[in-house]
Image (cartoon, rainbow over all chains, first blue to last red; front, side, top):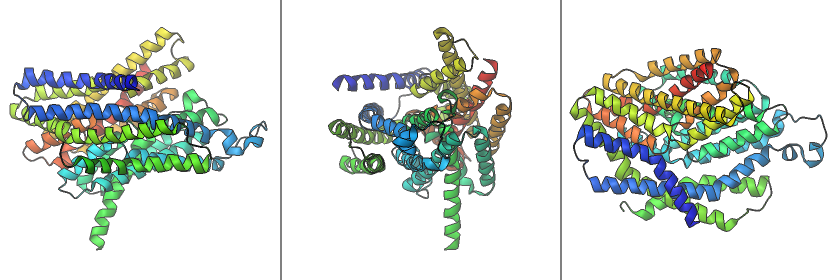
Length: 255
Length: 241
């Protein structure tokens, strides 16, 4: 375990090294001024490094093995149709028989998004800059609902084998219409929330779900059909965050 | 450490509780199986808890102030060229070594080999994956440059983003079908857990140090560009490669 911890720690450092080099380079060659509170910032950076290393190692030990296995098992024909029916050749399940997959997609999308550190960072910043108007939990729950809906719809798409781009283009059309009516202040934050949601915690489990579905659903090819869930998970939060602001504005007026 | 370590530990506990409930429910009720390696899972959960708490502490102490102080320093210096160079370096440098991107690029190379777009050899796959990584890193560097330029000039975000969506749609019509899924996914995986707070603080810091800019309306939006341009660039790579 100690060896694992050291390995994860090195991997995290390697990940951060380019950022550190760029900042140190520009700081010393271009800006040529010391950073205010240097030692405090340095300690903060160290906390981020150590914290992220523990976070990743912990996920690797506790969440990823069981989560990935679960995603595979829920998509397996033995689970969908029962052991005795699975062997009956030529029978493929209806999309509705995958109901536990949709429930899992909703639940895992929501819960992993709540735990996502990058989203927490953006929510803290937005809370601070909006003078408290945007709640940390309000924003995170709005984003998490978006990811949940996105992944569930993405799972439905893989199961039915319908083309990805029609869903994404329809999503864009919704985003464009909402942009016309949403409060101006929320728009940049909503657009940002699409990209921040899918990182450390969500991507590995969601990728396993996509792969599990694409390799188990009859007629799907794991190489071509497993993609697309991340795309859904980064589009839908834009819609739900704008909806959250629209509903809040409407509620404030109604009262 | 400050602000009560115990209190932020408790906050992290609430952040992680939903996952524990979901996994527990599906394992015990839906799949009806016991939880394997309980001790390892408990240790791992403890690590996740400690890690998240430290990360949040470090965020407030280190990453946010760092991003803001860089923004103020560049604003004081007043050189747009250096600012844009920094923006490009930050976008390119943080993306090119991103582990999630390396994994996706490898997957994409397998898809291309399966679809007989490239040869099935190890060498051809590695070249393809490396080219894709460079493409995505370039696109993120370009995205941060455009995003920073937008903050400085005060351009409205929505026209640029909607323009980008139209770019994605047009590219989708011409790109080979097997690359589309990977291209759409690559938008989401490029922004890492350390890049996001740093870039957000940079944007907000820039918007607050330039007269006439509002941190909410002008400061956010950099991540949005960074998750849009990779889709366009990857489809272009699929058409050329």
